[in-house]
Image: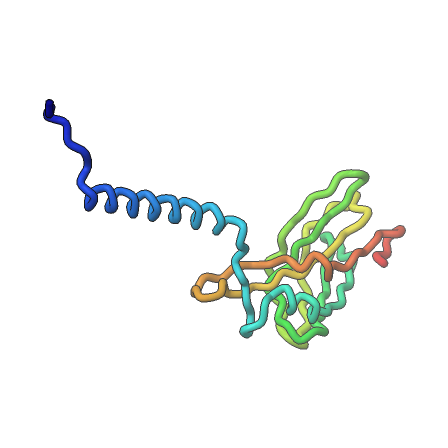
Length: 156
């Protein structure tokens, strides 16, 4: 005896299976994309490689109204800005100093360091483009930082 039950047609079942596979593939792609970092480039070179070419000298000058940084770019990469880690006792604070230093250039800039600051670490920051896009992104070169320690009124 036949009742009114009918199964899915093979065409509908195939379409549903293909749709299910596509949805799963999209979910896996979006999940895996989070593990792949964006490639940031400058001059067509990965910016991490350019960090190794960064070279700069820094001098802290005690001025009457605070401190001045005199920074000279000795490398072959323009520096976009600087992150300065200010260490007082066991505490640290990172400040950004948005003054660029081009190739072979020297810049003198007033900075707002506290008088109780014992040590500073100056990190250069480069700017590059995300590969395949016209979006700029900054990268801090933490391995190229320069540490200065205050001894009396001198910074070494």
